[in-house]
Length: 393
Ligand SMILES: *Cc1c(COP(=O)(O)O)cnc(C)c1O
Image 1 (cartoon, helix red, strand yellow):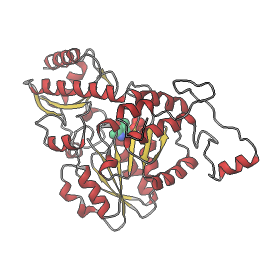
Image 2: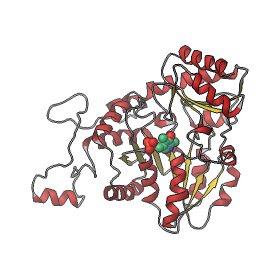
Image 3: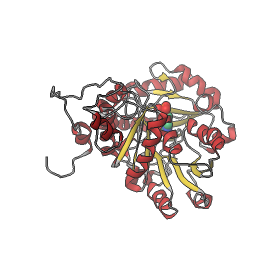
Image 4: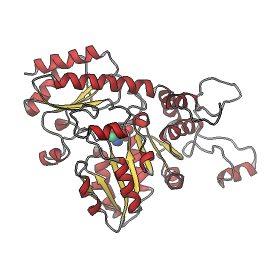
């Protein structure tokens, strides 16, 4: 093909770069912990980074390279590394670039374990943080300190589905020379590309939509070359490497990401609209619903609304628990981004360690239900949700 830029779906399928001597059509699996050197000079040159090639799977492996090169292409990033979990990506992307005395400005609405890194682990190394509210962007700039080095956000947020304007945030990071690190797990590269708006690093839990079938735990960090170089050094010596088998699974998954996300989003919008019509449902949140307070921003920075819908069921915590127990088909699990629809009650599970006030500050009311809308037929999903609303009365 010519130099003409190809489209997302094509890159996700056709970006395979190398074939082995067997001329396979689909990338094979390279389960090997190390690689042999041609001779002493080759070994020296590899270790000196003078020639490309693999040494040891903790550093790189053909499957990990293939997965990450494809993801870089899809995110519009220069370079990246694959990690054994989403949290390994979040941690490595911060720990590699921060040092004692630095400060992180983070969205209050970040993933639970990201909170633990900022609240509990980083203070041991004298790395401090301040939280800012995703729904109050005017407060962010005043929280930047002379030692602030990084801004860390998730958009859409989990589980409240609030958005932050990435273009505005990119400009803020630029103005203060800060590294903007965006956890793009909920949107995936198909729906949103933070690099386009000025992010320097994009982090993923590939466990969610990138795998998309609830099989593997994995993560990825992509971004600007010079930052990834530092993160690669950190990862090479601390060892969060992804298993080649998981990288192989994920690379195949990327080939279907666009079609899967199209259907996740179509089903999610249909379920959200359906829920808005139910009398016992107090509030429905979905970025592509007209009633979402940031609908215009969602249209600007996201291709579609994503696969997660949240709603508030009348009757608080007790009704929320009853609703989950009444579901017949939907799974009750803490995961998301699976082919199977999954319902979660954050107040009694994922966010149960927060106080009521802390939960309310990140938009988690007692009766909030999060649904990761899967790829089952939408009529079956609606029917199960409806019967559970009725049965939990
Ligand atoms: C799940 C998740 C993570 C953590 O990823 P793991 O793969 O479970 O380690 C981080 N951020 C977000 C937004 C997530 O949903």
